[in-house]
Image (cartoon, rainbow, N blue to C red):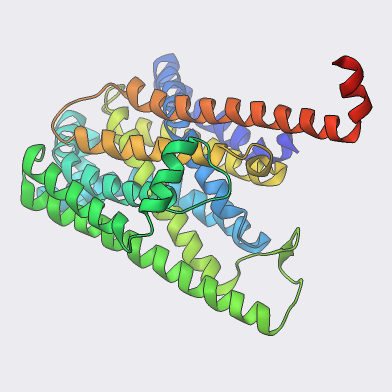
Length: 362
């Protein structure tokens, strides 16, 4: 299963590294490899979140995520989007931006970095909303039990996540933003994007559930759980793409610490994005989130940390290692906690199945 799932990523990696070596020799090859590792380390929590959403989608839409979604992630977000962003912020044509990237990559880098506060505001607020909506929902299973249970109770206050996100945006605009108006507009767009895409997804999800209750059917179901199809799946797909975009911002900006060549950046981050996609599918097929129940919690805490980091970087530079480690630490801690929980439950089950053995050992 692993070989089949990651085969596309392996083929793309070989082609990308071969192209890098052909056009730039060992130096470019090394840069592409470094950027790929950077992207994977920064986006592992993205794969966990993606897996949670993708597991609710039909096989057809999972394939769309792996084909059209990859094209959008690799070529759209890692290559085209920075050009569009520089074009909009600098007020020059896309053709001029491409010429600038080819002939004067340092100026191109500076133009992109100048747009970073707006990027950070949009992505930071979008990710913050994902985190807040998760922790403000009461759940049967809690990882950081005292904190998550308390937040779940507080979250009964309607629209609390929106209130906090708006408060955070105002605070950041006043204290960290070099251009408060631009940051406020970008942050509001991030909030509106989240509310629109997430709201439409929930709307069609509720409609699908009503239709399922009216006409029970096992079609499009997996393990007894109805999978999203049609409009609901489409908006889940849009949600995944916007989520991937929010995660990719820090990777694109951080990549300039390695090289100023936008095409090398796109190639290296594209390789990383391919592996994140493959890892997402692997987690879904293996049922990893069901087996290690705290992984999703850890991923959302990592998202919360990334949202804060993005907003801090409007004014202060933070090393990419800090960004990457924040996600890795949360995921690793959640995985270890899940393993401990599984062993504890297995031991309790064994004791229940064989009470005499427990008495002898005592």
